[in-house]
Amino acid sequence: MKAKHQRLVLVIIAFAALIAAGAVFVWATRNQLSYFYFPEEMAAEPPAAGRAVRLGGMVQKGSIKTEADGVTVTFVVTGKTADTVTVRYRGILPDLFVEDSGVIAEGSLGKDGVFVATNLLAKHDENYVPKELEGMGTEQAAKMVTDTTVGLK
Image (cartoon, rainbow, N blue to C red; front, side, top):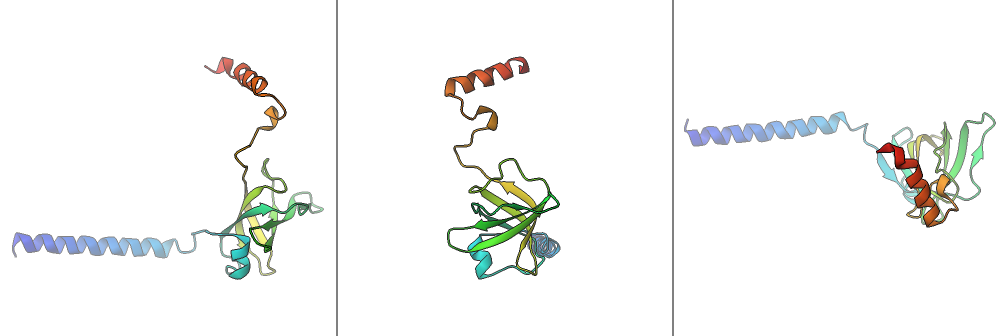
């Protein structure tokens, strides 16, 4: 066999191995992928019950309710339309989690239509200010930052 043909055979084998490796990767991770849904998408085409997905939207004003155990919280996530999704989360809420703010809930849709979250990620807007600096003027905040970082150098 000529060297030219040997190289061609090696390239074809390498290409076939690459395709096989990609197919194995996709097959192995098919249940591990987490798709992102907005409330209107979840209402139109809900994912299968128990499938790991992410739900993103805004926490509806007045919808946060803490259950009697003190750890379980239910709230409603809204999107750009009137569609809403009820979310149940058991755990410690993030500090930035408040009404009328953005949230991403990781979890799965239950058979009863309630989204059961295993993790919450609270989002803030571009005007975020830490609680410690709230209500301070620009000069006061700069002085506080300077005072607290003097010994860190």
